[in-house]
Amino acid sequence: MSYLDRIEALLDDVRANGRYRHVETHQLENQIDFSSNDYLGLATNGQVLQAFRFATRAGSGGARLLGGRHREHSLLEEDLAAWLGRERVLLFTSGYHAALGAIAVLSRTVRTIYSDALNHASLIDGIRLSHADRAVYPHLQMPSREQRSGPSLIVTESIFSMDGDVADLERMLRDLGDDDVLLIDEAHALGVAGDAGTGLAATLHDPRVVVLGTLSKAFGLLGGFVAGPAPLIDALVNLARTFIFDTALPPAIALAARVALVQIRNGDALRRRLHENVERLRLGLQSLGYPTIEGPAPIVPVVLGSEDRAVEVSKALLRRNIVAPAIRPPTVPPGTSRLRLSMRADQSVEHIDLFIEGLKRCTATS
Picture: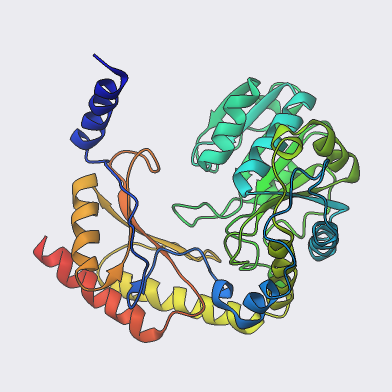
């Protein structure tokens, strides 16, 4: 039996469990889209797009420690640090790379890593690759200081990516020991929540707090970063393999991100429109009997149960020109397959109402 035969056997198992996926080759055109994490609509913002017209090269040319260092990178890092009220920021090519790099370095300063059960795969992978002692705690139930083993790294999202619920960051900070670290993934909060879109961790003025961020959601671009004390950033530059050995972001993306940051800082109207859209969707779902969670999240799940049902309803909506992707295990726990709706400031009231009506009809006939 060849390796390709064994590959086919693996795929057969995926199909048998109702979890087969494929990458669509067509663009989303003339469709009502609830799949994009472009929460403020900045991916198509005219001023952000205009920034790319000033690009003088397509790629960075290498890693930052070699030929890939460009002024745009350091300027963006300075802007992000000032915005978030942190000493320093270090850019990575993605939020995934930022998570892997930060956890690998921070794990060397603690005895045990504690991770929320519903953390994103990038955080889980970073913890596993660190080979540190680790414990997974029930969702939103961080063990008390007395229950933890020595210096600890606590890893959590602020807004969780699949349920849209929120960690109690103030409580978590109060329960930190002097030798603990709290790593907060703000991917779904930055640009969306907090004063000037600074997220949910911005009020935690403590050197034990380290923030993970991304440029691929509310910024509408690509990239990730770590924000925290200057010594940590120096350590990442010297020890984080996903920074040292990775080609740097194209400088044009860094420039466009600085323009996007201006839009975010002045984006109260965009955030207000986003949250109005979220509230309208929640009320519509409640009218159909679906429970919803209050809060700042731009993520609204519609839990349908089985993989087959989630896929069936998603396909039925697509026939109505509505893109509402089915999320299945291993992304979510078994029995909680769902539609994951990403809300945006540039969605219209009509689009939300069409989704609610479409969901009502599709679930009534499925």
